[in-house]
Image (cartoon, rainbow, N blue to C red; front, side, top):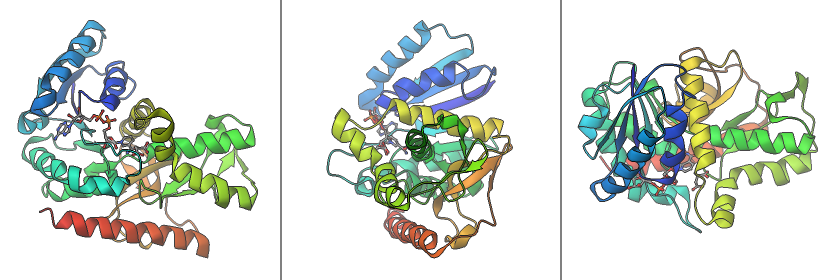
Length: 317
Ligand code: NAD
Ligand code: LMR
């Protein structure tokens, strides 16, 4: 039986994510105890979500608790989806959200430090996701850094889908794709190593740098513009993909995972950075890839952006 925490339980992403967890899409056939964490003002709405979840009579759900007490929520937690945070509106950058959201992740990191299960897996979704994961990890000094990830699987899925559309192939046929760096406009969706059905992908360079890279990187803003609200079901689906692959492994397939750097590819140690990784219960960054000058420059731009965000985050402590 696994105790799973979802924060921001009354929000848009949770409204999709909770059902996918409860249906066994993340942890397989294992029964789950769900804990929904909200702020006091949204407790009633979270209770409503819990009522609907109960009404779905999903066979793997053993209990559903709703609380506004972070210490209680994370006590004994084996996995946590840290979704609860303000989304950006039109014209804002995700980094603008640091002032509004950063402190949430100090309090939650401290609560995870105080009581989460050994080996807890924490996936930060709330923006700016990479730096919020950095903050939560810093607030949890007794929990190994590698237990904190940030969600960049949505960027990976967007890149996979757009590339597949361009090539006229099925998204599942695309492998060895990575989105390096930060879940922000500087992110670098990289198809240098990509294959489709095992064959190297070849695309026009102008399309790649002029259309594909900026469109993937700005897709979140495009969704906000068209939908009027930030992505929700696709974000939940990506969070399911990320946590499922972390727990169940990837059988050698690459995933994009934002995790605390150990210095791979020259990225400052500790920055939560999107890398190519495979999973077998724990993530292993794909090492030894050769990078040309253009790739290096794009990766460096992300290191610099995350360094600047980390400097702001450090002042919150
Ligand atoms: P939403 O506004 O619909 O819901 C957020 C919920 O979080 C609200 O119910 C709010 O009350 C709650 N909340 C705020 N502070 C909290 C706290 N301290 N503890 C618990 N709950 C708290 O927003 P949403 O659409 O669900 O998006 C949530 C976050 O996810 C946003 O920051 C958004 O930008 C981010 N996001 C990230 C990605 C990604 O790929 N990393 C994708 C989509 C959205
Ligand atoms: C996304 O990528 O869709 C989310 O991070 C929401 C946003 O602000 O872009």
